[in-house]
Image 1 (tube, helix red, strand yellow):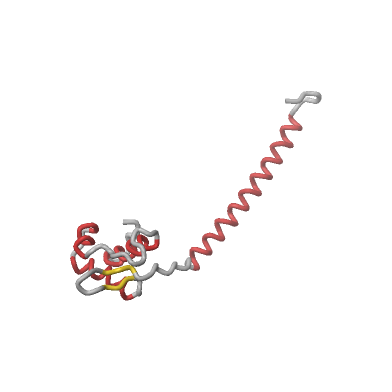
Image 2 (spheres, helix red, strand yellow):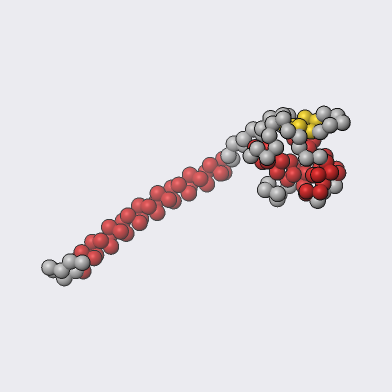
Length: 124
């Protein structure tokens, strides 16, 4: 399973199915795995497998056809990054810039030291 391992099992399965719909494993118009296939794949009870599919149906991502299967209706809406994620990303970028500047300063200082440490008239 590629989804997060946090939260209720049915939600983990629903998240995994969402990811597989988004990556084209289960394209729009195609059937999702049956309840028995989900039970076997994820090692869960019929109740958990049905709850995962029901979550996708409630979101309008999938729709059941009685006596047939549950079909993908649309791709999931991409999730917006959280405020915390955006803040951490900005902090990482600031750290990268500071590190780049520090490396440039160290390189410049090393070049200056190498030039002053060479005896006059000698070059590399």
